[in-house]
Image 1 (cartoon, rainbow, N blue to C red):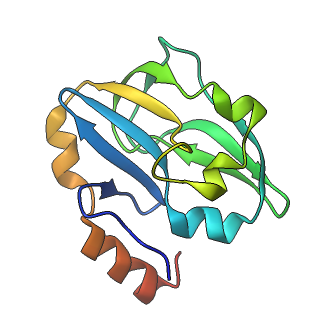
Image 2 (image 1 turned 180 degrees about the vertical axis):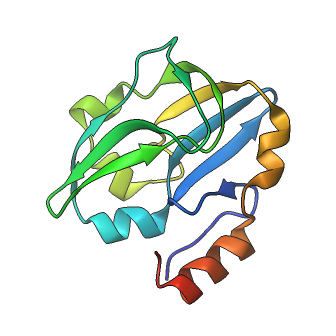
Image 3 (image 1 turned 90 degrees about the vertical axis):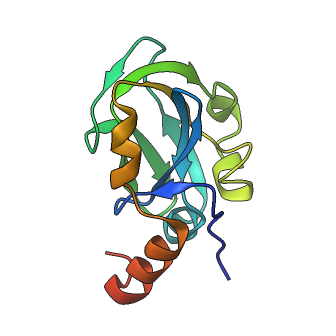
Length: 131
């Protein structure tokens, strides 16, 4: 059974965001990594890159598919999880921990309010079949 930590916010594209003051840590959900299968490569932006809410910021490649990663929030990338270059499997093993992808300095904290709660995200997956 997939789990969705209550303190995170979620998108319809299966990313999560953890608010950390005026920043947000971002990754993909347990559901997303499960659907993708074994992650073999993650392409992430460089620090300093500006991202826009619901626009692609990178790519995750698995044995099954190549998928765009969508920014849950707008802002500037201030941290990138460099360890995923050598160990992309962390996305599968620990999607909410070691498998995080980027940290965004938020352009507009109000955007957080537009994201789904854990309960909303779980309901979305069940009703939409994930899509």
